[in-house]
Image 1 (cartoon, one colour):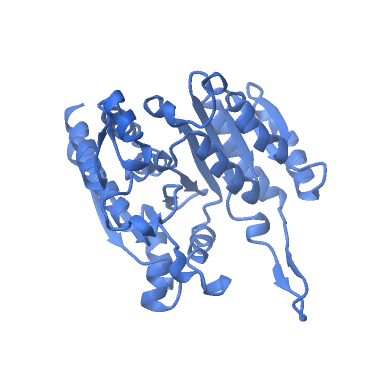
Image 2 (cartoon, rainbow, N blue to C red):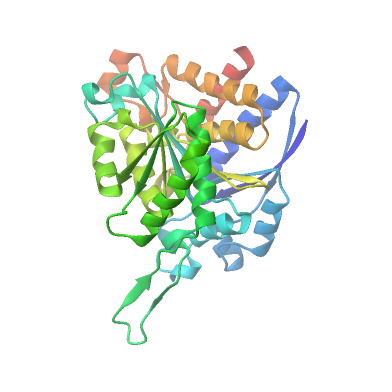
Length: 364
């Protein structure tokens, strides 16, 4: 089978990690008989430098014409002085809105090989951590009306949701829970916010269609606390754009390995947008120091959700597990020099880690 993938290397370590992701996809293609073609386009700071715009029209057009989009990272201090509508991060909002990918799936998975890096006590995390956060991605405050008063003394950002926007992402939450441990928690602030009360009304109207899913609600401040107090109580969390942004980053830190975490942004039709959740890390760009595993695992999500290639996705995930089992680590997931020696960890760079995953794909 042939698939067309648009790549957006972006800024900082983006080109380094996207390169390794594509190498792994090519190894999957060789093993399973698929062909992946790539078209590289500009977005973020790289696009600003080249065109003056964070998201050129031709970039969005290429993405919409593709089978899937793989994004590295955007942003960096170089562009921090620009106004909000010209910053690299504006490209992310433009891609999400333009591609109509309204649900962001972020697995917070603690790999057993990296459990020592978890900042929580072992009695809290128990046998591991596996949470899926489903974040609404194209509504809420990030896309609402905003502005400043003419005298500059006040500003506003408006949170707004329609029933349709809520229902479509809650549906993905329910359906994701059906495939996992059948527990769904809707996180909101319904004691204060009218939009949150609408979230609850819509969810209550839908729950009858999913009788085997255990449904609960939790205020966002309590959810933030419970993620560090008792994360094992969660299976699938579905929430609004802003709350999801915050909670998914918190959950990623709980795993102790932000360099390992992938994400997928999906809509009703059209290509999905796939990106690791870490930032652009410009201080290590081009130095062979970045961890490519989050991007490689993101490629597994791309195969699973956009191409329905479950065996191929699992092959990537098993290859990553094998490499970790053998003790290979990039600097961000390795212990101190003393700990590495005791644990048998071996320190490698970006390209070597990619080599190891490619080799594991060929032998497992």
